[in-house]
Length: 150
Image (cartoon, rainbow, N blue to C red; front, side, top):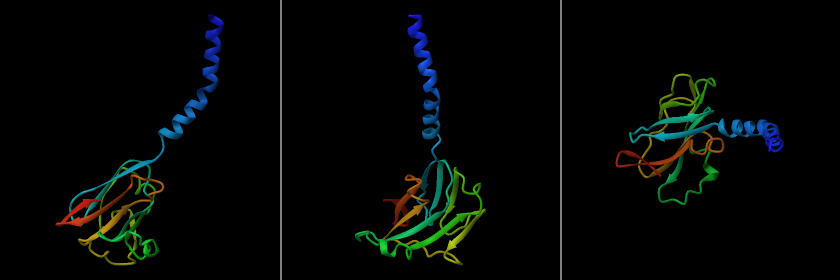
C-alpha cells in the first residue's frame, strides 16, 4: 500500500507543471465582452479582461439587404478609434460613446470631424477585433429612436 501511494504521488508531482501550464494558458486568456445601451448615439462598455487594440463602427447596409457587402467594407467604416497606450485600451473599458473620442484615444476614421449620424433602417457592427475577442463585437440597428441588438 505504501509503495503504491508513493508511486501515485511521484506521478502526480511530475504532471503538476503541465497541469499548471494548462490552467494558466486557458485561465488567463483575454476575454472581452461588449455591451451597448439603447440611447442614440449609443455608448459601449467592455467587461472581462485583455485590451482593445481598436474600436470601430461599420455600416453593414440595409436591414432587408443580403448582408454581402464585404467588397465595400472598408468604405463602410464610419468611425474608428485607437488607444494611444495599452493602458487606455485595457478592459474594463467604457463608456465609449459613438462620435466622442475618449481621453487617451485617437480617431483615425474619419480623418477629421465627426462621423455621420446613425440612422434607422441600417444595420451596424461595433467593437474590437472579432477574431481576438468574439464577444467583443455587437450588431445593432436603430429602431424607433433606440438602439436594438441584432
